[in-house]
Length: 105
Image (cartoon, rainbow, N blue to C red; front, top):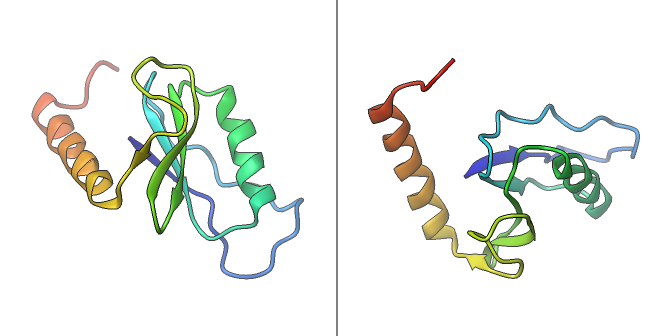
């Protein structure tokens, strides 16, 4: 899972650019999060559609990560990953990356 924070601190205009995409390993789930207008989330989803992401989820503080788009059999649209599981997934991936090294260049 890769986090993509598109949050803003205050009022923002639609022409304000999104942050650069993080490095996304092919097939990974991308979690879009941050306090932002709905149209900014739509812009982020559009940008991610052409990325290596296998699926995209948006963060809802009451539910967790809600998968909203998927091109992978691993993830189904409408699936909810509770907040405590998000942290567990991220911690496990950090440990896995440390134990396997940086990977091929």
